[in-house]
Length: 97
Image 1: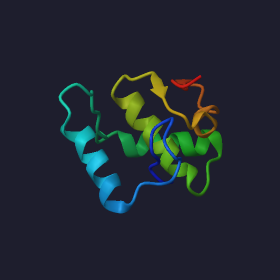
Image 2: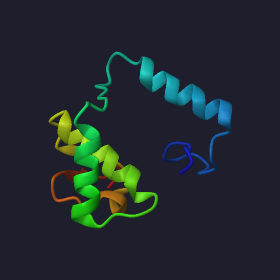
Image 3: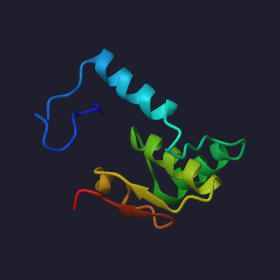
Image 4: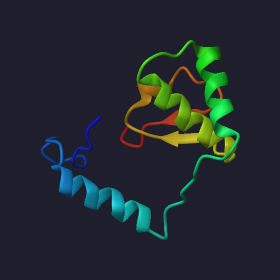
C-alpha cells in the first residue's frame, strides 16, 4: 500500500520522505484519537484469521480490526472499504462517498 495525496491531488504516491512527514504529523496531532495493540490483540487477530480464513496480506487487516475491537472502536473510516467489508464486528465508512 502506498500513501497517496488527498482527494483532488494528482493521485501519485508520496515520496518516502513526504509520506513519513504526513504519518509523523498524524502521530503528533493532539486532535486525533490513537489506539494501540494490547496484550490480547495477538490472540484476537488469530481468532479473526481463523474465523474469516484470512491469508497473506489480509492478516494485517485482521490485526487492525483486532486492535479496534480491543480498544472498543466499532467504526473504521477508510477509502479501502473492500479490505474490511467482510468483518461483521465493525462498521466501515468511506468518508469520500
